[in-house]
Image 1 (cartoon, rainbow, N blue to C red):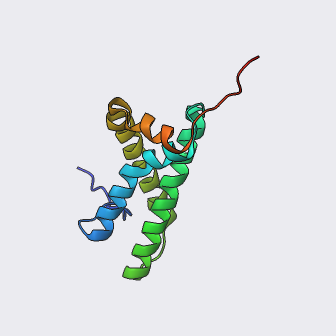
Image 2 (cartoon, helix red, strand yellow):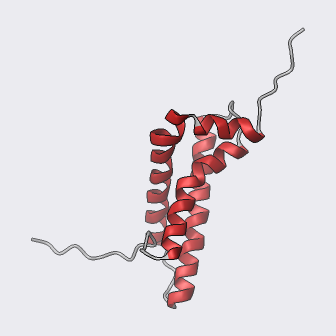
Amino acid sequence: MHDVPELPVYGFEPDLGGLLSLVITILLPIVVGLVTRQSTSAGVKATLLLFLAAVTTVLKAWLQATQMDVPFEAVPLIYTTLINFGIAVAVHFGFYKPTGVAGAAQGTLNTDKSPERV
């Protein structure tokens, strides 16, 4: 049997920072809903969600690297960004969309007001 090397991953840890990171990741779809319109394409929304997941992960990784005095590594950062993006997408389609939270978020700040046709 082959030994799989353990990768350092900037992810959830059972501390306040890890819990905060998880909560932020779960709330990212609502943030995207607040800043986009209902007519915004799914691709744009997904790109924005991926960008926000990356920003969250970079901030968390930077904080961990600073506190633990370890080097800031790119590969685990990319891996964790994709995991956070997957969690956010799963939460959106598994919880927010079926319960109407996603639609309510989009209706709060941004409404599509198209001009009336004459």
